Length: 117
Image (cartoon, rainbow, N blue to C red; front, side, top):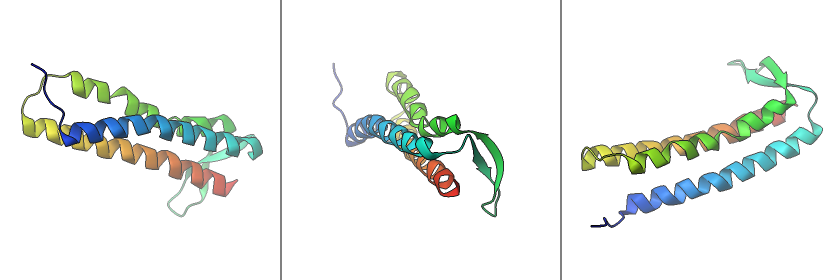
């Protein structure tokens, strides 16, 4: 018998789909920064917002690719055996929040680098 999807399942699928949009947007943003970036860019900043680590400008794409992490783990969550409804709800909410945090980390990392170039 097929289970009907809950609102959380639908929300989860929407966020999972938005991962692809976030990936495309961040890759485009990294590409636009890449055009004008010097060969050596700051990739790590101290607490006082001063660059203290440098890398190749190709590193811009590693920050932009962060949403891929959000694409790898969700399928495992749907395919696993459910221990309890509460545990499943907690796991899905935690994963949704993690995916959103990954988007934010990618965007703000690129913004910080773009502002320091």
